[in-house]
Length: 260
Length: 263
Image (cartoon, rainbow over all chains, first blue to last red; front, side):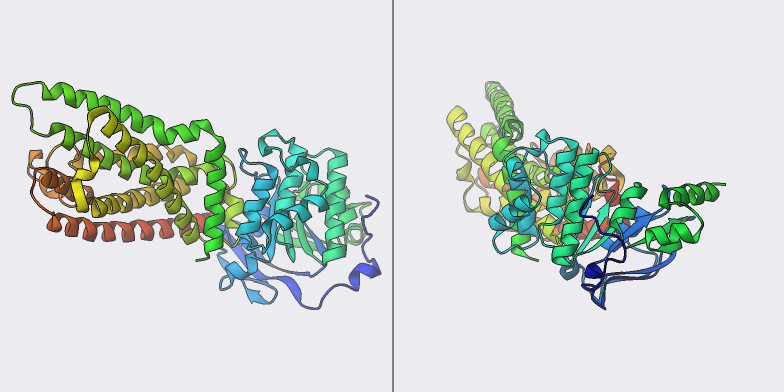
């Protein structure tokens, strides 16, 4: 975690642009009688890492899927780079990417082949070169010719992250990127994310149940409960605001109060 | 529609076939068994007094044409299922790939697969039974085109059903085309159907193709009316299949089913 920034790092803040990379306004999603997300609004600026926290069922994945267009919101608006998502899906998704512990890549292809397919899908001018760049960046060159079926879960997570970087995204959406990883692998992934923000000014929205990770990684957190944002701010600041020693203590208290 | 995205998806599946003997054999294995089974059966039936003249031509021609329809459908349905099985569907649909480009890629794949299958079955029919499939003549081109389009329509509907109901509906990928087979007059003429079914059978595009094929083999000339009917019906079927697919895709997005389709 040596490269992890502390919130308020002036070198990072100076790179933030005024226009938000993501703007979400009054987002709501209902499934029949269940309101999964209720009037959520937030921004993520360029070069900012924002954590989306909350207990299971709080609406984190629903929000991520809505941002990616795989889930249609009941109401509200999603904009990327000032463009409405609904009318600009293709051009926006060309500049955005996503990775999750819960998705995979075709097993019968090598790492290089898989990444090559996605480089082409995202319209890379030189797919082979782009793949090599990403492999080098994530220190995955040794795995390039290996079938994805032969990767460990940690290696697969890093390859999925490589897939998420294949279009050099301006916005990265990550659903529990370090879940099921050992501490060393998780640390490598966190360093990659911090490096991305530092080098590419990438906006990152990340969900995680690892509160120490969120404290170390994020400039700001959005704390969700029952589909609403109930707290927002820099991780240590909001823990202190509510009289808790750290984010994990706050998380446990709020989650248990929410469950009655 | 961006060609580079369609070709990227085609390449993804070609890698798969290049490497997987099981998948590669699927293109050849079942057509080979079909040709052997039906070919020998036909030869046996021909030995009976009063056997249907040209039975080999009728049955093997029908078999090869049916296989074209079936492989065309499978090309779409199985390509989609490959993405479900490998939990890759979400990766694809969070990319700029559109649903239309996805379907276009599966159509290209179905053409490649059925091209390979057709070469094998036609060669086997010639080598084993001396049957020249190309004797059907010029009508073969519109026959095949119509069957490919019907296979696509069935494949698109199958894909929509699996999208909507998840992997528990994947049996449709193998079964739906066979629902059409009894009413498509593949191995027997439409005239054998009882009233009611007979009229309904004329609304299946494949019935016109197979009737047309029998007409050509029997020396009845170019079956323009059958081909016109098949073409018209296929246009309607394809439009309905696409409408059903896009409507289902909208429902899938509304209900967040894309995330769960592999469960």
